[in-house]
Image 1 (cartoon, protein in one colour):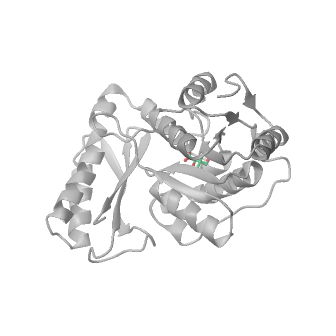
Image 2 (image 1 turned 45 degrees about the vertical axis):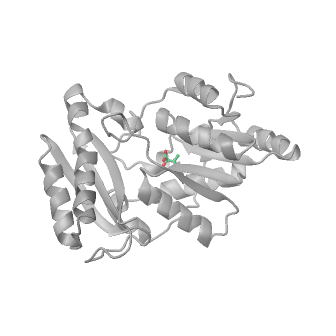
Length: 285
Ligand code: PAF
């Protein structure tokens, strides 16, 4: 990173830094994050660096995407460690605004992608994707990246943001990178640090359940209800788990489907104790 200690807190300053980079002909990539960075984020930053001459990582725990009973207050804030990871992975600038910088008094414009946000996490977390779309569109206007990178773990988020970019003619290329996993298969997530040792031991069974659905689909099972029931029962068998959803939907439209014909998204959200974990796999790709 050009200035490893420098965290840019204002919109004016990051705009100036990006303009200076663009003036030298550099392509700009943005990796939007909420901080508490892990190896999955490092992979996004490295992928951004391969594509662009100037990589901005935004770190902002976005209040508008948390529900009133969710973990906004306790969401991990680890700026020093995040700076080190950004420097190591090759970011050029960190944009870490305050809530007042992003949402000044009187703020009142929001972006929605209805229908796509009515299923999976959108159905369980009302207003979540409205908050995500609003902050990401603001970040796109502030940073004006040529490329933006997101992780495939948040599959519904990627589908919704791609639709927002298409429908609102946002001049940015969306690049979705594969989910990075721990050695035992658990998808990397900033929320994994909430897990107790016992919960951490059980958490890889979420990915195992998704893999088992993929095996059944690979072996020829086409009946989505049967596949969904198998996924649900594998997840429900994890001791102490509460299944928030276990779904198999069309991988592009997120519509329900009876038979596996086109690629489908097998997606799960599971509470282990108070921690809600999500993961997914594509079937029939
Ligand atoms: O995926 C996330 O970390 C967040 O939803 C994002 C895209 C940074 C928006 O706050």
